[in-house]
Image (cartoon, rainbow, N blue to C red; front, side, top):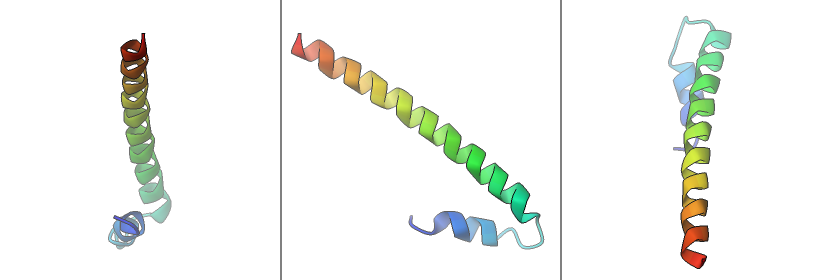
Length: 51
C-alpha cells in the first residue's frame, strides 16, 4: 500500500493536483476518524474486562 496515495494523485492526469490532494486528505481524515472511534471502543472493552 505504500506509495498508493502518490499513484492515485498522479493517475488523475489533467485534473487539478490541488483538488486531488484535497480529496485525498478528506478521505484520510475520514479513515483516521473511523480508526479513532474503533480504537476508543476497543480500549473501553479492555478496561471493562479488567474490572
